Image 1 (spheres, rainbow, N blue to C red):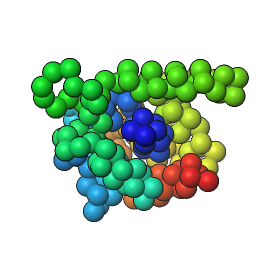
Image 2 (cartoon, one colour):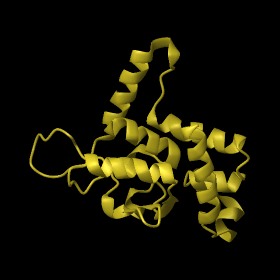
Image 3 (spheres, one colour):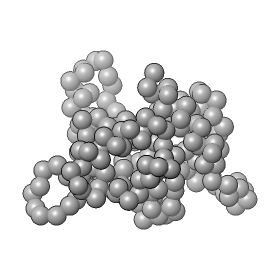
Image 4 (tube, rainbow, N blue to C red):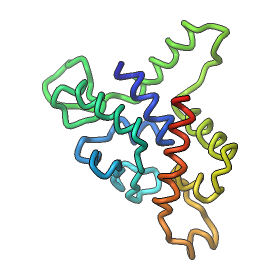
Length: 170
């Protein structure tokens, strides 16, 4: 169940696997429906706020119950040593590989990173503005846009990710 919820969260939030596996409960604000990725966990080295659709908030709530008091959203489930550690990203890769193998020809092999490409393609197909879609993936916009456009597009990203989550649920 933890793997299922993690994969759904990756797809619905357009995040990178390392951002999710290093996420801590202090980064999730259930009331505001936001997940803040700290600068040290972000590929571009900048803090990033992800608006969470209601379904995603529910998935995080389920993960919280499965975390058994860990500070991590996805803690290591088997304890080889004392302490509290996050899940290794390779754990989700292995889960996806098993799923693809079990499904055989019904599913082509994919990686957690492929979920970002899938999300980006669907955001475009849904008519989400290019800049908003790129910001959903926390991509650097580059050029003059990066210099002059400092807007966070949080409201627009929330609308896009709410629609994306509804599409996933459907």
